[in-house]
Amino acid sequence: MIKDIVDIYNKYKGIYGYRRIYIYLRLKLHQKVNHKRVYRLMNQLNLKSTIRPKRKRYIKTTPEITAHNILNRKFEEQIPNKKWLTDVTEFKLSNGKKLYLSAIYDLGSKQIISHKLSTSNNNKFVLDTLKKAVKLVPNTEGILLHSDRGYQYTSRLFKVTLEQ
Image 1: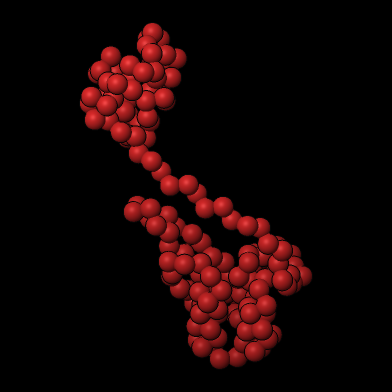
Image 2: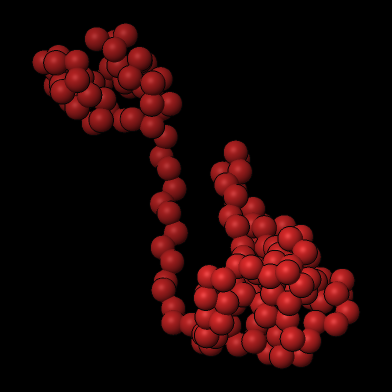
């Protein structure tokens, strides 16, 4: 039984505690065992389950400003600097942290105009990407900027920056 407990513990990388190992032994390996015995044996072997942090709960908010969907899924353009697309992508790193990529893509030239990496996903991050694109393309008048309706793109600050 000790070998089975250690095998299950290692199979699930230390995530399973005595309760789940007990259930695994009973249901999958069909062993008659008491949960207190599994608990005692795990203590003797110094096997402790990993306590994972709770996920953050995000509060849904109503967008301050929502623009009309002018592009309407017509992702075609021949002339550069007429239609830009923007979005933020989240990458989960091996150390458990997150990295965010904000990019602005030109439909006409099929190139990324500007991009930025950050460890935090906030308005400043998206605005920095937009400001970088505006510096690279001097005449931005008449460009259609299309985005998903993420909170950064529906904020008042983003709208004010676009109007400037």
